[in-house]
Length: 620
Ligand SMILES: Cc1ncc(C[n+]2csc(CCOP(=O)(O)OP(=O)(O)O)c2C)c(N)n1
Ligand SMILES: *[C@@H]1O[C@H](CO)[C@@H](O)[C@H](O)[C@H]1NC(C)=O
Image 1: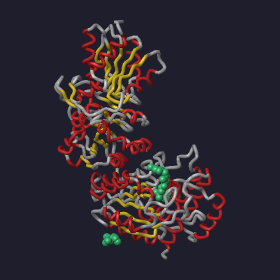
Image 2: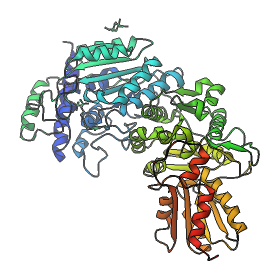
Image 3: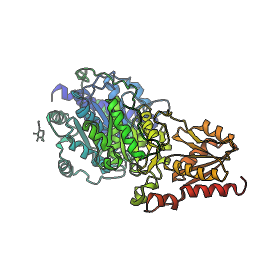
Image 4: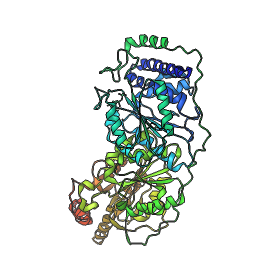
């Protein structure tokens, strides 16, 4: 054994000791999940990865994503042992005033994204590798991702694997920690390493199998991986869960359990195994520094150019907006999920293939990939897909919020105007979903002009943004030079005798405008507000107008009532003496034409007229 190999083995055991001492603080954590990857982490940090230790987010650095985020303590231990922060801080693990949380989050300067909802780390790593290979031309950094064997039961793992092999991401090295065990018992494949090999080879990966506790084998495999071209690599590491942590070694019932009374004995044994006096191995720097991208102001390459009153679907306008920001800003990229024909984002592909990323039909993977592409400000990503498909990506979106990602989501085909494809294809829960995401900005534009401006605003907005569009053609109502701001609603009909404030967005605005015409002919005046953003909501504008007309609001939306526009307005006025009536899609819809459905499900102009007349009876 060379001294280097012995030192790396000894460091692995030092990391194990750090883990045991840290989890002893709160007596919570997953020490056995840490121990199986101790040698892998040691070799990565002190031999294989090239990074600037004191500037962990330098874009030139190799990236490491710990997809099995519950093994966070050993990742923290490695950064501390390498010298990024003092080792004695490790014992603050999982305590309120420490950023060393139970699962990694980017509160720590060396963490790119939150992981620990198993499966979600790999798509992010894949997104980073895509950027490293296809976008950051001449970049030398590589991406490593540690995945648990239990984690491999997540479908998104295989979606991400598919993407990485399709794009031949040879800068990606996945390490599967095959420790046989999951949370409650043996994983589906147990220790059947051949089965993993067959599966990964079927996905066209360069596969190497190692004893994950043998430093020499690890070094050899990482060397092989660094030389393989035109395909991603996977290291299948045969490991022991709880290695050197008796009595948890290779035993069921120890997931997320601390050793309690056995801790000291284990530490003593590990200390006895460490014989290196002075360590010479240390982290290797990246070859050169890379500047961080400065996000400058994103603008449409040309102002909206629509013909007043002519009809356009907002999803088409959204695609036009995407093309315009792709034209004007080199960091804007569009991620499609094989629906660009109906979302019109194929226009981006037609304009410049290199700015259009086909993620195939996995919305969950696409969101993770876009989050990865956004890391270290490498790109300004826009995911373009259908609204109804995003529910299955919700976990990735939620994790993105914890990761403080700046991704933008364009959702087409929202609401019942989807028509003949039926309820399966209609997004009717999306506002509820995105309203619940911390810091998310929700645009609900009503015509082509406002939609293009929503795209422009989204590109400049921090946090997750969501743009709700539909495939139903509606007339242009705004002048091409109209100014839009986040959190600012627009009053479109205003009369001194207004009795009711009607708040709406998207296709329903046009139904409300038609209703307004009919009602005003009958002498009943309503004030019409186009909400533009549902979150943040224009509370000031709503209160001012509602109080102006006597405190009565009606909301109309192409969404289920729960969590939608109506409830957003209700929340905004809850502390005032204001009455809010809500018109929303009342039940699961069915197939039909858009026009028929608007009427059948109660959100057409005639329904709105009827509701308002019922509200006021003969009193107008
Ligand atoms: C999406 C998701 N489902 C379930 C869990 C709960 N969970 C945490 S760890 C774990 C087992 C993971 O097993 P494996 O990937 O083999 O990791 P290891 O055995 O190394 O701890 C589970 C089911 C989770 N964190 N995320
Ligand atoms: C890497 O390892 C694989 C699997 O053992 C082998 O087929 C391949 O030739 C090796 N490649 C290099 C460049 O060492």
